[in-house]
Amino acid sequence: MRTGKPNWYLKTICPCCGQGLLLFVVCPICEYLTVKCLEMGDTFANPNKLENWFTETCPTCRIETSSFIPANSDHINKAGFDKSRYE
Ligand SMILES: [Zn+2]
Ligand SMILES: [Zn+2]
Image (cartoon, rainbow, N blue to C red):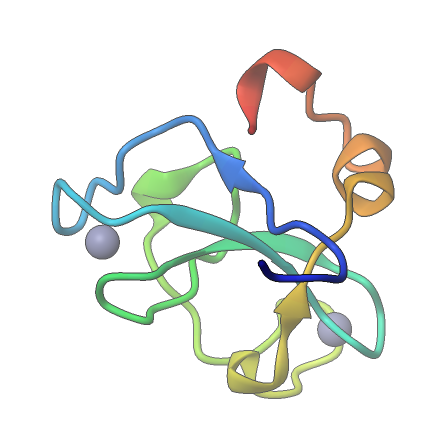
């Protein structure tokens, strides 16, 4: 059994690979919330506009998205996601 905080996923299949789970992640500096494809390891620029594709740096503070951390449900609620849109 894993302990600790659960990870949260967008209830949408990844448009880049058609199979990846989209994990919610946040910037550890500015708490910018987005999603990351677990299959490809790429971070989307905007969780509401997946068609904008990927970014390698945080859109607001410019640190690398490789240092983003899994989001908690508070982050996700604060960003305006309805409970029905993630799991
Ligand atoms: Zn993908
Ligand atoms: Zn940031």
